[in-house]
Image (cartoon, rainbow, N blue to C red; front, side, top):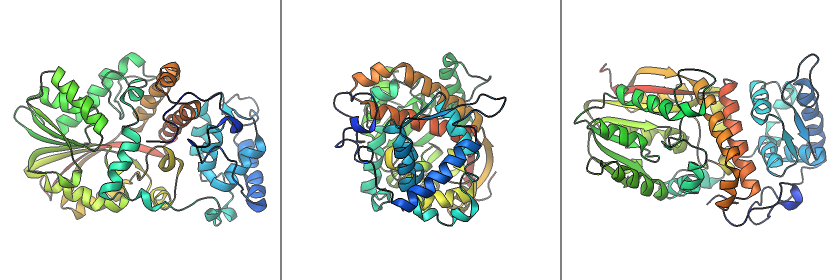
Length: 417
């Protein structure tokens, strides 16, 4: 389980109030060394001023970053780069009147924040991914459980009643909270239509979530096999499916995607590829291809980033890897095309809608903030809550800035349309 996810609530966030046992990466102020700290002081100060994040730009009032402990802030960034930025927020060393807004500006100008001559020294601020991030069968189960087995009630505190944990598709912006369940069903139905799921379809779902897609597929008359490595998700998905009277149509299995059995008319996988890890993408697409009956269709939903950004990220230990999704990597469109083609699959359709994910994340973040007392009552301390807020705002910023996108793809065998 993720550090900080159990026990009584901690006091207000701040470096001296962080539980060192729960948060070993946050409680101590790391030693960055004189050179790193000096470089961070110079680069960070210039970048924040240039983007108007510490002082409003002339004639404009944008989101502001408030430094409570400037020296600690710079020291953490000098030692850990973007991980240090996040850990400094967890420690309460800075705040913002608009966290998602600040992170959006930083994401939009990420390539300009560090002067070109210093980019060659990138190794000073980043570290390689730890071996435990590799998604072997044992590590994959542990990595999935560290996120999805935190608590079903935690996820219910910020998701809508569908418990769908991926981008909705809205009909208007800004999206209203009440529109989220219908928007999630719209997104799910698009995937089911893409895969031509209907009465009698044999459907394999890789990545169960809490069962909403399986429920809607079964309601269409499909026979669904859905795979997950999360015991918490599997238990609640089975409860929801049984309550809907569809247990005879849906088989929820605690099974690795690499062990999928039988052939299916349709295969659907929603935002699973990001958790697989780059070293396992060949086996992931091979498993998709192997599970497909002749003439079948694969509907894939994936978050994507630019190819060069993916290559840099893939070699780096990031805040999201360390605290939220261990072992994961967001692919590029090029990587998806390359690995799917190598497995004998052809991309027939590819549609992006990143702005919808930004709105989805905004609604989740606002609901999480409104339910802080619920989250505290579940035993998640203040530092965990700041971590989760940072994660949601960080993700929203990725989509608002265009750094990230989300896409629905249709894959078929070889050249079959």
